[in-house]
Length: 331
Image 1: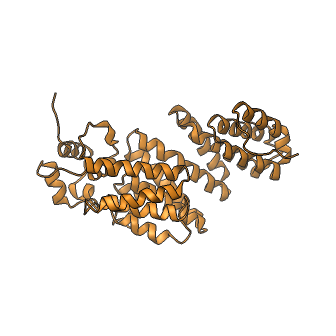
Image 2: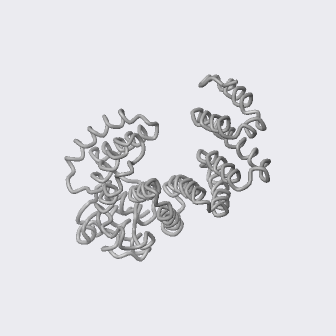
Image 3: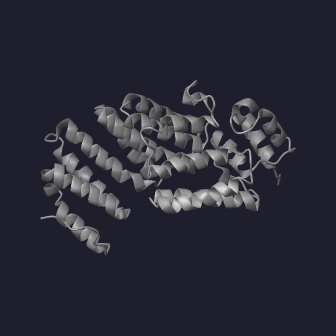
């Protein structure tokens, strides 16, 4: 059995994909640096290897790697920070980020690590979301490793997972600043990029879900209802097929909301079914605060639908089964 170095893996895949050293290395290292890595004259850091592989649509866990203790600890800190943010523990995330910032000082010239640091600082400062005035900061952070951003279409660039996350945040910022058509174009380009450039891997499925949720939301707000419904239906089928059902209840809610805007009386039965699926899916996923949001939205804005699905009793019974009393139901 042949054993390949990280440089050999990068070189073989780069040539298979038809990328030049200049295209692949842009913003991550110099073409000369990549050449030395590929020829075994320099061992890439874990961050460089991950970033280069993801730009070629590959998930680095497909390869058995020996990672130095220093890089392993940095990678674990990144995971802890991301996990804290995902669970809205921003103070906890910030404490770990301080440790992370000190650790990466020992590995200079790693743009990928510094880029991660700057992005998380923005997210933590915004308590989970970037601010309306952070557009320029986001674009500057992205251009640390993608200097060609804004000069080419996304499909013409090579982007890794972290860079795609930043573009997603840029699109959200455009939308929240009232430039929804521009945001929609970016989301569409991002999904197109995933389909064309990323292999069927974990990163692709992780990123597809929030991208499609954002796109459905803003298409709906722009009253492009038919496009939004088709996309939402396709996304439910795809996410269910890949076992990524965490986001499916939100898509059911979006479908119901869009149909309400179109013609509530005409689609009342479908709306009722979609709202029921949204509530039940959230309970199955133990998203209790999210269930509360849907029920309160219905009680406040759509009492007739709340009554049709017997929302009060339905949620009370299921939450009792989960042995969790998380809010008081109204009269």
